[in-house]
Length: 457
Image (cartoon, rainbow, N blue to C red; front, top):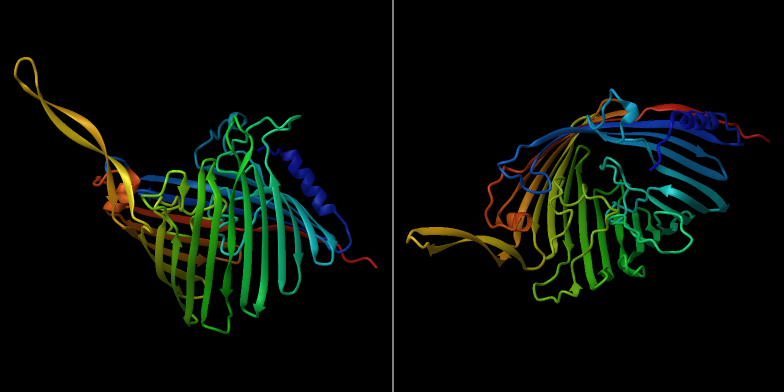
């Protein structure tokens, strides 16, 4: 991403605040979000020979927004860094943590209810399982694409398309090598209000990836399904039912046939106590399945990991045998500023699974002088993974200091077992620390400027 110099920033600021279209409004706001983390077994158990990590990261954004009857636009400049990654005494030579563009799009009104949106933009569908702004991430998720949108009182339609390249070319000869990103993307998203408080959404996604550097033809992964959500403030019960089916290919040579089913229910006991219960089922592959086929659901890398399967993100990448995640929790509103969430996750494999484990095997042989010696050899063998692969508990505390400032703190722990170790370390037994993760995050969102032009008759 290109650096944004101070002159460009000042020019855009002057342009925005001085713009005077009929009924136009411009705002300048920001987000400053430092987060200090303690990791002692994040993503996988930490070997007891290693020390826990302790660091601070920060995301800084400045947003320029323009809205009018015919045109909406946004430019978001972002800096994401780790404290200490650059030499603050020599800013001219620092190469890490440069300011970049997170969003830069324009949205044009075509006819009533229909808009065309183009540029770099974040995409969020429902709870963010497949496409999310990924607010927890220090960089967030954004896409370079175009959308045609239609919105009415109870119907919404989004049709999107993207074609990625790493350079301008006179011939299509360059392999697109950005990790975990598509060469081509198309999606259709529909939302429909069935009755007030009950909404149905449908989503179809077509991702195209190039075969290899030698073969630039595309193979495709298709994901289709949707959600049914009941959310009514007058009713104590709410739920979100999710179902997706995947087909096509997961790699150039592996045929894909997989699915996801999920149910999350909430219940409001009092104005201060809410309950949560749910289950996620990600399909997996049997041990006997041929290597040219897979039934393991592909979690699209454009969704959010932090909101599903626990804050420690042990199963952000699903096991080959799939995953069943059952969860339960409670949300407490202690007062108007302070609230907390406690959530339990239990993890089991959807299908029986084997992993190749390397074991040390001692062999005895005699030297020429008759002395016994021992030789350690590594022998690989298939080990059956227990279906139970551990559980997790997350404690989160939220405190609202003001209308623009909030603090969040959390402590999370994982109860690992032999199944966890086999999947993470390919060993039945391994000496690790008790897995835990804690953070303290401050979020400040000030508004610097707001301008508007009254309608001219």
